[in-house]
Length: 92
Image 1 (cartoon, one colour):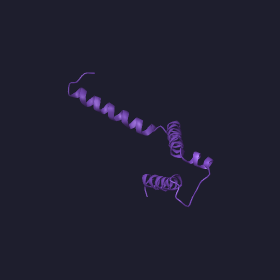
Image 2 (cartoon, one colour; image 1 turned 30 degrees about the horizontal axis):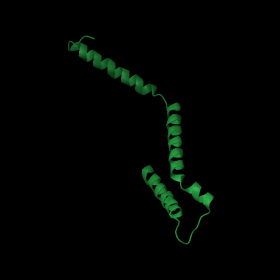
Image 3 (cartoon, one colour; image 1 turned 90 degrees about the vertical axis):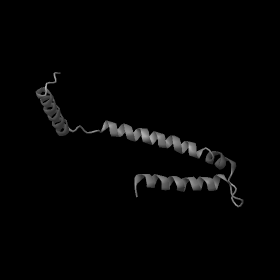
Image 4 (cartoon, helix red, strand yellow; image 1 turned 120 degrees about the horizontal axis):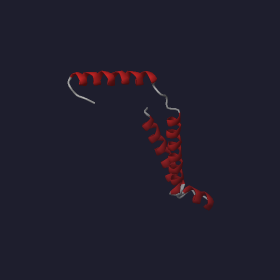
């Protein structure tokens, strides 16, 4: 299962549980404080997901590895391309 599938399954599970409690089926009566905390829950979860996403992107940026070998190989390709263009008469 892909990561998107996992997130969607979790979202459907939480959404259906929230809807079942928020719509208050006839046999289930929640106390008022629980009901007041339950109604804005999707907004709280959306904010928490945004914070998690920002933290994940920040962490991945902070621990991004440099590829010295790839940088050296790219510089060689650039040098070879410049030499080829010089031979064809292009001046830099």
